Each structure stands twice: as C-alpha cells, then as structure tokens.
Image 1 (cartoon, helix red, strand yellow):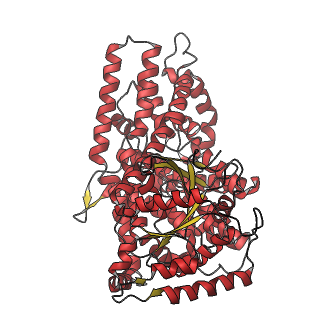
Image 2: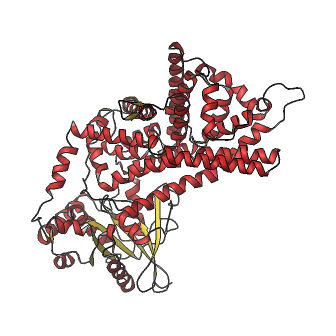
Length: 629
C-alpha cells in the first residue's frame, strides 16, 4: 500500500534521558497502548497522532540506545525495529532521532549510525529552550549540511515544535529515500567504525556547536550537593523516607473513602438481595474480595508518582551514581539501581529494565534480587497487618509509627537484596563488577500532563489486574470456602468443612512452626498468582467465617484472632516469599532458563520460611504470643 494512503509509521529513537518519552506523550497524548514485542518481554509503546493535513500517523517509542551496535536486549529491539527485522512488525517509514539539545556529543554518533541504515530520518533537537537559556549556540544550517538530514527544534513538555516536526515527517515520508547500500546491506559497525563515527561526531560538534555563553551553573551547584558522598546519600535516604511515609500517611483519606464506598455498596447489594448463595458470592466473594485490593490504589499511585517525578526531574541517574559504591560492594552494577528502584513499583518491569546492563553476570544478579525489593503488590499485605497490630501513633513529633514500620519493611527488602547479591557473586561467579558509566541528564521540571498520563496508565494496569486476575480468583476462593457444606450436626464454622478448609488443615502442619494458622495457608495458595490476592483471600475467608463484609473490619478481625508474633511472621514471610507467578514467568523468559527461575523459587521460599521462623520465635520469647493482645 502506498505511503500516501496508509498511515505513516514513525519510530522515535534516541539516547536515554533525551526527552523521547515526553515527545511521545506530546505527540500521542492518551491515544497510546502498551504491550510487549512478539517473542520478547521488551515493552512496546505505540500511539496515534493526526497531522495538520489530516493524515493519521502511527508513532512507536523505542527503548533508549547509544548505538546500533546493540549490547543489551533493549538496544537489540531498537536496532531490529529500525532495520525492520522484528517479527510481525513493519519497518518504520521515518526514523525520528530525538536529541537532548543541551548534550549533543553522544547523539551525533547515533545519528551517523542511523543515517548509514538508509531510512528516511528527521533529527528532533528536544529541550531546545534549555539550550537557549544556557546560551548554547547551535548553527542549525551548518548542522543540517554536516549531517544531511532535516532538523526540527522541539520543546516536548510545552508542545513547541510538534506541528513542525509532523510536517517534516510527512514531507520526508512522502519523498521516500534510496538506501545507499540496498535493503539488508547494513552491518553492525565494528570497533574501528565506531571510533571513526565518534571522530566524525566530535568534528561536527566542534564545527556546529559553540560552548554556552552562560553555562548552567545552577546544575553544577545542585550536583555539588546532591552528588556529595555524605550529604547526597543523606538526601537520598531522606527522599526514600518521605516516599514511604507518604505511601502510608498521605493515602489514608482516599483509602478511607474507597473503603466506605465498598462497604456501602456491599450493604446496599445485600439489602436488595435475599439471603442465599448468590448474595454470599456477590457480597462476600466479589465485592469484599476485589474491594479489599482496590482500596490500596491510592498508595500505589503515590508510589508511582514519586518514581515518575524523580525520573523526569533527572534525579534517578544521580541516585544511581550515589549508590554505585554501595552496590558495587554488594556485587551489583551501579546501573542496577534503576531496575531495583523500579521494582518498588513492580518486580516485572524492574526485571525487564535489567536489560540495559551489558554484562550477563551483572544482569543475572540484578534479576535474581529484584523481587526482594518491596513491590507495590506487597503494600496491601503490609498495610493490613500494620493496621491490625501497630498503633496509629506519632513519634518524634512528626513521623507516623505505622509509616516507620513500613519504612523498616522496605529497608529489610533492600538489605536482603544487597546481601543475596553479595552471596550470588561469590557462589556462582567471581570477579570485578564492570565500571559504571552513565550520562547525567540536565535537571528539568516534569511535565504535569506527561506525569498524569503515566500515572493513569499504571492505575489502569492495576485495575485491569483486579478485574482479570483477582476477581476470578476470589470467585474460586469463595467456591472453595463454601463447598462442600458442613455435615448435619457440625459444630464448627462452615468453612472448616469446605475444600479450602481441608487444604488449609492439610498444609497447616508445615506452617505451624512459623505461627501460621490454616486460614493463612488458604490465603497463601491463591496468593501465588499475585501477592495482593492474599489480602482479598483473607477478606473472603474471614467474611465467610465471621459474616464480616466491611474491609475496614478485616484488620480488627485479624488483631482479635492472631497473635502479634503471628502477624510479624506473616510480614517476614512476605518480605522474602516469591508470591507472584507472573514474576517467575518473566524471570524464565528473561534468563531463557528454568535453572535460574528454580533457584529463585528455592532461595526465596527458603529465606521466607527462615525469616518467618526466626521472627515468630523471637516475638514469642518477647511475649508476643497472646492472641488478641
């Protein structure tokens, strides 16, 4: 089909931190979808935009790269997408190379590599307002002549230059191109060719770009503080402390509102329906189960908001630089910091983000410890148990005691990840960790619209997870907790005679040494699908056995029926246990090996049992064994 008839397909390529995602959001807005490329777990983001002429353009946001000489799975996907080698993917009609206008040194080499591919290309000098503010003098006409490609200046966060970029893309797409060496003639540049391209880029840089008349001294002053080996670490710890306090404290009003809404909804539904199986399924199984998970959406949104804002501001790279020495001592590459920090939201994107680490050993080490970071799916479990057993008090005049416990659980995950990494590097392989090199982006104010779009996408993923995974599981838990009915003359709770009760009783001896009762065992089984399902399962189990439908009452039920030692052991279990089958599946795909997934299952369950055992026994010795006290 002719390019004038079908939608033009353009691919955004650029270095990390070049503002590529901001440009993608400015082009497509909310009209974007996220999936994975066929056969790989690399995230695929595509959206649609309509040009001034009325033509629909398809925009593909490719992973950041410094060179087409790919050294990581992310970079390999970008290379193959540009070359049209991806299965089921048509090659782009136009490649838009997105460059940080304040830092052209590395991207010019990438432009030369892309030009050698022979596809129509446009260079977008993004963040051009910052370059002008710094007094950076870029001779655009000379740069166009030196590179031989059209150039458009943009400010993605303010949507400046977007119309010009789309017009240039249309012009280039319609004009087409003649591949200099013929389709398929491209070859991966060797070290000599890379050095030659780098020399050409340096020459073009000297010719076309003059140093700033007004250097950005503010960035230097901020970095002096934020990158200080002592003050910088204290600031980083302070930011993490505020983030974890916010996850617990700031979300409380919204959580209370959602809690009250679901309790009211359950009560209204129960009032309209006659007593019976259908009423129990809808109220106790579906509303109570799903509601007990959705109530934690505000906390997850707050956590993602912190991560997105820190990334957009330009602080993440600085945090990785600060943590390099600490992480290197534990056997982790400094670049692992961003995947591990991403794992606070979810281990799956954290594991996939490890693809940016070149060394296979460093990448495997990062993958193996990423699930130990406290992901957002643990938040419902932590919040429930903390609310049940930790008083809602203020300490030191400003800090929430419950928030401090939450911070301690996050710290336990971090320490355990560093410890396991230290062991892995000395058991499976030895040697020095590769040196850490990362481009520090300029500081910039996050774009509110871009942040909101990213937050909405993450919230939508969580809600879809609640609909696709949690709801069906809650129906299964309800069925297992309801059938078979208790025999005539039975004196115990009905759930004790159900299939779920039988399973719980059968497995209880295994978990009794760590203080778990049979109801907790029931919650662990469906909780393997997703950690937060354990909360919904507990809500369903205790709703059936105690006729309790309000989510706010679950914490009170647990505090009355569990001892403090049991509650703390349950927390310790969830610090370590691999209660997430999708995460294990991603580990299998990323490592292309059953071996590493099996090792992860064994060591994490082993740590979980050991941690829960020690916690339970110590708590018992300190007098925490009284039920309801």
